[in-house]
Length: 112
Image 1 (spheres, one colour):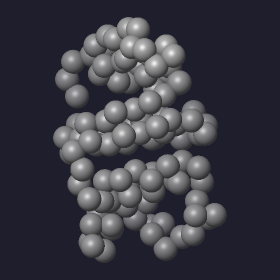
Image 2 (cartoon, rainbow, N blue to C red; image 1 turned 60 degrees about the vertical axis):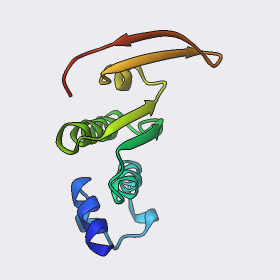
Image 3 (tube, rainbow, N blue to C red; image 1 turned 90 degrees about the vertical axis):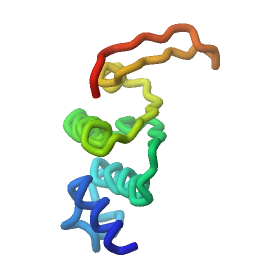
């Protein structure tokens, strides 16, 4: 189990922070720890609810880059809920909901 945890922290760029307490981490680092916790069991899907919501733009971009890397390098499927248009622009498919009803969907790009 420890090996899996170390590998997950390495993937998210936090191997050097393994022994830090949550209060010693930035918001972006806390988000990356959450992603590491999610990937440690090697799931096929990751459900991300507002992964950039409380982050500054630089940290948000780091998280989005990490999520893209998980798709490209590790074959993960990401389902992300967001109100951030910049985060949505990075998605392959965007679905819009209005009062719980699907009102629009569009494929944004191929690949990834």
